[in-house]
Amino acid sequence: MARVFVITGPSGVGKGTLIRNLLSRVPTLELSVSATTRKPRGDEQDGVHYHFLTDEEFASKVAEGAFVEHADYSGRRYGTLRSELERRTADGAPVVLEIEVQGARQVRETLPDAVQVFIVPPSAEALRERLVGRGTDSPEDVERRLLVAEEELTARDEFQYQVVNDRLEDAVAELEQIVSRELPQR
Ligand code: 5GP
Image 1: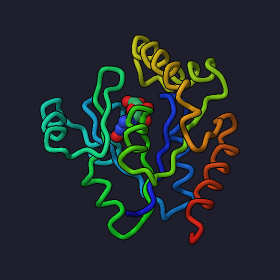
Image 2 (image 1 turned 180 degrees about the vertical axis):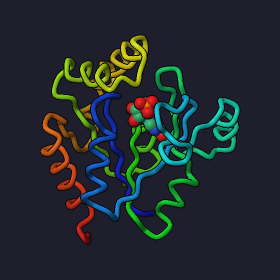
Image 3 (image 1 turned 180 degrees about the horizontal axis):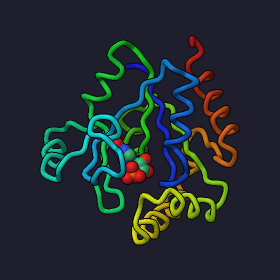
Image 4 (image 1 turned 120 degrees about the vertical axis):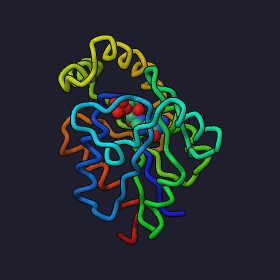
């Protein structure tokens, strides 16, 4: 199995931005596109940002055992499809999963060799500012995500690596170092 990097941490911590920057610095890394039952936001495209599924489609894939991990998050379902992971790693490329904490815990069980990184916000206020500032979630959704975040933050010590996302540049550099350490041949 190719190297798998799990990047987890609360919603709004900046996982997506960090990963975009990491991928531009380490072009061999592939990003796994998750499946979700939430609706596309803004210019999100099916198959690019997510595989957007109906509740019925998601449930039948769960029943088929098609997911490596899946979780309910803020009233919606999210998961990593085994087929997606296999396609991305077919040529041996290392792959990144951007997932929430429950899913990351499952990956720890099913893929114990995966590298696990938890992204920590510099403060609770910073998290709120980012969630409000990105303007993609309703006020109710922001509050719900902040409640989940509080709970998710208590899990940080379970993870092998922790990266504080204060200055973007520093956090990306730290992630790149982790990748270099775990992929010595690169
Ligand atoms: P969003 O709705 O903001 O795109 O994602 C909400 C949360 O779900 C984020 O913390 C994101 O990392 C997480 N997430 C995205 N894809 C997956 C996935 O495949 N599995 C799990 N467990 N979480 C995911």
